[in-house]
Length: 119
Image (cartoon, rainbow, N blue to C red; front, side, top):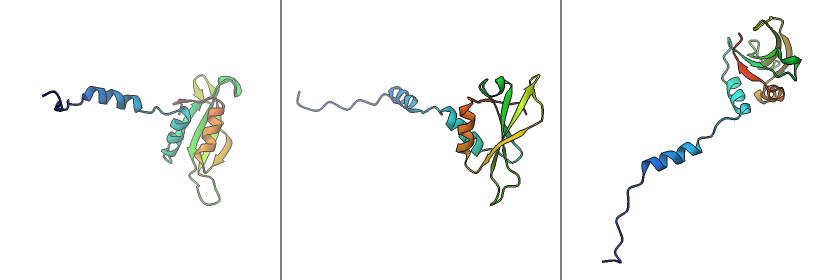
Protein backbone atom coordinates (compact mmCIF):
# COMPACT_ATOMS: atom_id res chain seq x y z
CA UNK A 1 0.00 0.00 0.00
CA UNK A 2 1.12 3.56 -0.57
CA UNK A 3 1.27 4.56 3.10
CA UNK A 4 3.88 1.93 3.94
CA UNK A 5 7.40 3.13 4.40
CA UNK A 6 9.84 2.43 1.59
CA UNK A 7 12.95 0.42 2.46
CA UNK A 8 15.96 2.56 3.39
CA UNK A 9 18.53 3.02 0.65
CA UNK A 10 22.11 2.08 1.23
CA UNK A 11 24.37 5.03 1.82
CA UNK A 12 26.63 5.89 -1.00
CA UNK A 13 30.20 5.35 0.22
CA UNK A 14 31.72 7.60 -2.45
CA UNK A 15 29.70 10.58 -1.29
CA UNK A 16 30.89 9.97 2.26
CA UNK A 17 34.51 9.74 1.08
CA UNK A 18 34.17 13.05 -0.78
CA UNK A 19 32.83 14.77 2.32
CA UNK A 20 35.72 13.55 4.48
CA UNK A 21 38.26 14.69 1.88
CA UNK A 22 36.77 18.17 2.02
CA UNK A 23 37.07 18.20 5.81
CA UNK A 24 40.80 17.40 5.77
CA UNK A 25 42.56 20.51 6.97
CA UNK A 26 45.80 21.58 5.37
CA UNK A 27 48.46 22.94 7.70
CA UNK A 28 49.25 26.63 7.51
CA UNK A 29 52.91 27.66 7.14
CA UNK A 30 53.06 28.55 10.84
CA UNK A 31 51.65 25.19 11.88
CA UNK A 32 54.04 23.22 9.66
CA UNK A 33 57.08 25.14 10.97
CA UNK A 34 55.84 24.69 14.55
CA UNK A 35 55.45 20.92 14.12
CA UNK A 36 58.88 20.68 12.51
CA UNK A 37 60.53 22.49 15.41
CA UNK A 38 58.73 20.32 17.97
CA UNK A 39 59.95 17.15 16.26
CA UNK A 40 63.58 18.24 15.91
CA UNK A 41 66.25 15.85 17.22
CA UNK A 42 69.46 16.91 19.06
CA UNK A 43 71.72 16.19 16.05
CA UNK A 44 69.31 17.70 13.53
CA UNK A 45 68.82 21.26 12.28
CA UNK A 46 66.08 22.87 10.19
CA UNK A 47 66.93 25.50 7.59
CA UNK A 48 64.66 28.13 6.07
CA UNK A 49 65.54 30.45 3.19
CA UNK A 50 64.61 33.99 4.20
CA UNK A 51 63.03 36.52 1.85
CA UNK A 52 64.80 39.52 0.39
CA UNK A 53 63.31 41.54 3.22
CA UNK A 54 66.08 40.13 5.42
CA UNK A 55 69.57 40.39 3.97
CA UNK A 56 68.78 40.54 0.27
CA UNK A 57 67.58 36.95 -0.13
CA UNK A 58 70.91 35.26 0.50
CA UNK A 59 70.38 34.33 4.16
CA UNK A 60 69.04 31.26 5.86
CA UNK A 61 67.58 30.74 9.31
CA UNK A 62 68.85 27.66 11.13
CA UNK A 63 66.85 26.18 14.02
CA UNK A 64 68.65 23.81 16.36
CA UNK A 65 67.96 22.09 19.65
CA UNK A 66 70.21 23.37 22.42
CA UNK A 67 72.46 20.51 23.53
CA UNK A 68 73.25 22.35 26.82
CA UNK A 69 69.57 22.70 27.71
CA UNK A 70 68.95 23.17 31.44
CA UNK A 71 66.72 25.28 33.69
CA UNK A 72 68.81 28.39 33.07
CA UNK A 73 69.20 27.90 29.31
CA UNK A 74 66.74 27.98 26.44
CA UNK A 75 65.67 24.86 24.54
CA UNK A 76 65.66 26.15 20.93
CA UNK A 77 68.31 28.24 19.16
CA UNK A 78 67.82 30.34 16.02
CA UNK A 79 70.84 31.25 13.91
CA UNK A 80 71.23 33.16 10.64
CA UNK A 81 73.88 32.35 8.06
CA UNK A 82 74.83 33.70 4.63
CA UNK A 83 74.39 31.59 1.50
CA UNK A 84 77.27 31.75 -0.98
CA UNK A 85 77.31 29.61 -4.14
CA UNK A 86 74.35 27.63 -2.85
CA UNK A 87 75.98 26.64 0.45
CA UNK A 88 76.10 28.19 3.93
CA UNK A 89 79.33 30.03 4.75
CA UNK A 90 79.52 28.59 8.26
CA UNK A 91 79.56 31.88 10.16
CA UNK A 92 76.32 31.40 12.06
CA UNK A 93 75.06 34.33 14.12
CA UNK A 94 72.79 33.63 17.07
CA UNK A 95 69.60 35.67 16.67
CA UNK A 96 67.46 34.34 19.49
CA UNK A 97 66.90 31.48 21.89
CA UNK A 98 63.57 30.43 23.31
CA UNK A 99 61.80 27.71 25.25
CA UNK A 100 58.64 28.25 23.20
CA UNK A 101 58.79 27.33 19.48
CA UNK A 102 56.07 29.92 18.75
CA UNK A 103 58.59 32.75 19.19
CA UNK A 104 60.88 31.23 16.58
CA UNK A 105 57.96 30.47 14.26
CA UNK A 106 56.81 34.10 14.43
CA UNK A 107 60.31 35.35 13.58
CA UNK A 108 60.68 32.97 10.60
CA UNK A 109 57.21 33.82 9.28
CA UNK A 110 57.93 37.53 9.65
CA UNK A 111 60.63 37.14 6.99
CA UNK A 112 58.64 34.60 4.95
CA UNK A 113 61.01 31.69 5.50
CA UNK A 114 60.71 28.74 3.11
CA UNK A 115 61.86 25.29 4.20
CA UNK A 116 65.06 24.26 2.41
CA UNK A 117 67.71 21.64 3.07
CA UNK A 118 71.17 23.22 3.03
CA UNK A 119 72.96 21.37 5.80
